[in-house]
Length: 340
Ligand code: NAD
Image (cartoon, rainbow, N blue to C red; front, side, top):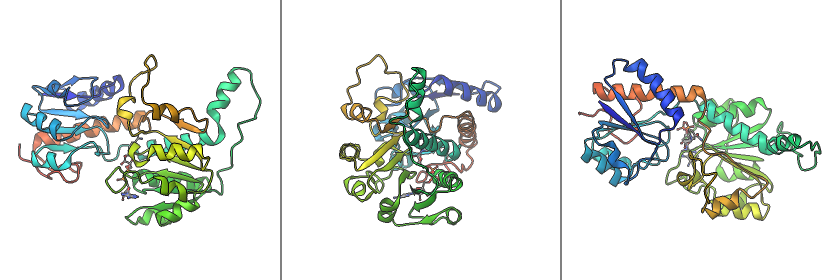
C-alpha cells in the first residue's frame, strides 16, 4: 500500500520513516516522497496511492479533492492542526477520510512566539551581528521590560493558553479574547472584548484559526484601536492580518513592531531556499525592509518533539483509516466513521 507524501522535506522523511518502522515495520506501507506541494498540477503524483499526506500549504480545494478521488485516493492525512487549506464540504461529499494532528506541541509554537517577542524587543538579532563585527555600541538596542506590561491574546485555545502561562510567569497582565470561555484561562488572565484588548495591550498576539470570521481580523480599524507603539505578533495564519494595512501602520509609526511566522502569500516562498532567486512579491520585500519587523518562515512547529508527535499521530490516523475505526482526529465537518 502506497502513500504519497507531498511537501516532503528531509526532516519529514526522517521522522516519518522513524514512525513508519514502529507502526509498519513489516513493509506493508510504502511512503512515496515528493518535494512538490499538492496542487492541481502535481495531483497526478498520487497515482496508485490509497492516501496522501500533506502539510499547511498543500492545496485541498474542490478540483484537487475530486482529482484525488478519481485516482482512487480515499484518505488525506494532514501533518498539521489548521485545515484552512481544505474544502471541508467537498471532502465530506466525496466521503474522504481526512484526519489532522490537532495538538502536537502547543508549547513549541508558544515558545517560538516568545522567541520572536524577546528578539524584537531586545534586538538580540542585531546585537549578535554587531558583536561579531567588533561593534559593542548599544545605540539602537534599547528594549522595554516586559514585566508589568499587558499582553493580549486573540484565541486562547491550546497555543494561546501555553502563551498565557509563559507571560503569566513573566509577571505580565494577560488579556484574552475568544468566543469560547476558558476556565483554564481564568487562572492566568482576564477575558476581554476584542476592542478593549486591542486598546489596552502592549503586545497583541494571534492564536486563533483562519476562518471566515477571523480573515483580516487585524485590519485598518483594528490597527487604529491599538495602543500607539504596540507590538503585533502572528504565529497562526497569514491571512489573519491585512498585510497592506499593517505596512501602512508601520509606516505611520502607529505600530511599534511586527513579528510574523506566517504570511498570506507564504506558499510561494516558505519552506524553500530562494536565496539565489529574484523575489517578486513586493509586499513581502517591503515588509522585510523595516528594522522593527521580524519574519520567520513558518517554523513555530519546528521542534524535534513536535515533528515526532506529528509523525506518530499521522500513523495512528492511518491505522484508524485502515481499520475502519472511529478517529478522534477527523477534521471537524468531515464524516466521523467512513465506510471504505
Ligand atoms: P485551538 O483550536 O486549540 O485554539 C484556537 C482558539 O481560537 C479556540 O479557542 C477558538 O475558540 C478560538 N477562536 C475561534 N474563532 C475566534 C475568533 N474569531 N476570535 C478569537 N478566537 C477565536 O488551536 P491551537 O492549537 O491553539 O492553534 C491555533 C492556530 O495556530 C491554528 O489554527 C494554526 O493556524 C496555528 N498554528 C501555527 C503553527 C506554526 O508553526 N506557526 C503551528 C500550529 C498551529
